[in-house]
Length: 113
Length: 105
Image (cartoon, rainbow over all chains, first blue to last red):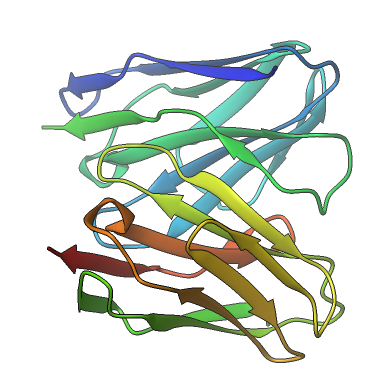
């Protein structure tokens, strides 16, 4: 069966510090991978998606970036965090194709102070 | 613009009191409408995918239905453990803001 991992689970960072969140998927090959942000009391906002190694599409302009160095690894990064980057970050995977259901990881709670 | 709206924002039920959650959508060419359950502090858990008007899917006390403009999540005789936020979405994905369901014993 497939499993998706995210770490860290919780992170508190000062404004202006760098960020690296990691997501890995087990039990599947060549998945589509996604990063979402969920602000308190709000819906899910798609940030990035990837259909393969090194292929990243950005949905929302921001100071975040994503990379996919391996087939089942997806990384969300920032060089300098802003207060507005606080939120709940979720990684998800789906089988190849744009319209398949996605399966989410446990999430990372990021607080920028 | 692709859009999804969920109602109500919050719903409080007594245990055993059946009800429905609504998901209205606007999209050119629906390729699948998804329902998820999200517990506080956790990632959404996949429930259903509906592809065409008239389709229905069931899982325990939950039944999802789809028309050309909206989807309903029917909850029959809910239990306290059904308390969660229920999200609907479609395509890649466009999500609604969810319905927070609280079931009291």
